[in-house]
Length: 281
Image 1: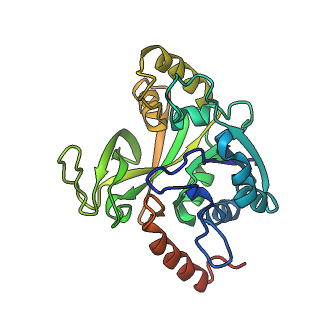
Image 2 (image 1 turned 60 degrees about the vertical axis):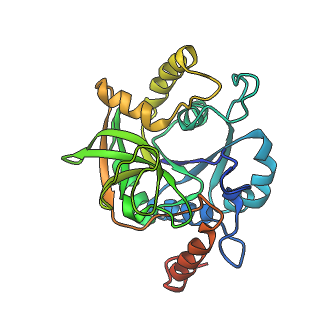
């Protein structure tokens, strides 16, 4: 069965300060994406689609994409920026990025961030779900908040309400510290709080939902600053009975490069995994 991995790699990494999608995390020049794609292929995915911005396309292909394309079928989608108002350079958001894949992706697919390490179990859960998913039967993997915070600065997480294995709601929560406190709202969370790290399993009917929601976004949003995000669209679809989301829960530690200082922890972790034989060359 054909199942695709869609990688959102259009972000420039403003807090990180550079093209973090291509940042080497091993001595032989591999980046986080090498490990993500390896885990996805091992789980059964057989194609990768990278969503990029035009400005980074050639650098991304040279530093990452061409190497990965030697191992698995790879395609590229450019996130359309033609509708951005004057003065805005940042794309409209993750939901718009996925919508840009509608003419390229014709099979069930998973969506991930380019700069997150999810662990092999997440790909197995999503792949196994997608092999039998019908239209509107989506999935996601939730992580424990305490396993996803950074010692080097605050992070944004989608705080999830999960009941009987189904995602009921998701709330984007900003500036969460290592102590699991949101500096923006003052809320204190338990380290065991379920959060989304933007790994989703979707069927192709989602493109119609995304298009309808995007049309509404263009008519009602502040286009200078608002973002069209994937969690908000999926939450809306669940509320309207258009979809249900099976929530798989992972106790794996998340690793990612939000801040430049996160690099050292990521390098140590992946070196340890390679030493354990999890990623043979």
